Length: 142
Image 1 (cartoon, rainbow, N blue to C red):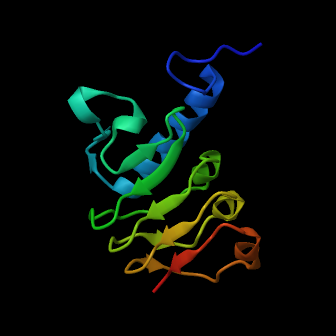
Image 2 (image 1 turned 90 degrees about the vertical axis):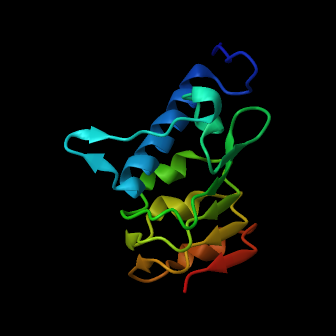
Image 3 (image 1 turned 30 degrees about the vertical axis):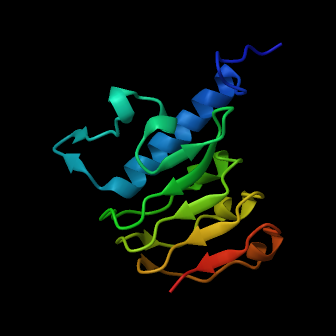
């Protein structure tokens, strides 16, 4: 039996996977590198928990459900690690300088209902797999 974290529906393994995904996303998008040091996000009251990061919203059980990083001056790419956030419903990365193509893992987010990627430098074609996202109601790309 896997041990659950206190005040969370997530197991330790699930929390570590989520933390890995969030750090990977942050590093890939932030472009905030000072020499060899990367400015990692710190949440409310100095918390390191990703659910306390600015622009991140989680369910009561601790699963990330929303990323709102619009208009943050982000410059990088969206990594495949986003696919590890299986409870993700809302993603707003609009009005940044994000480049590259959409990762294939984005099309595995079955609960995704809002995806805002407009006003970026994203290239490539939209996969037909986008049709598999049954809950997707809002999609902004331009």
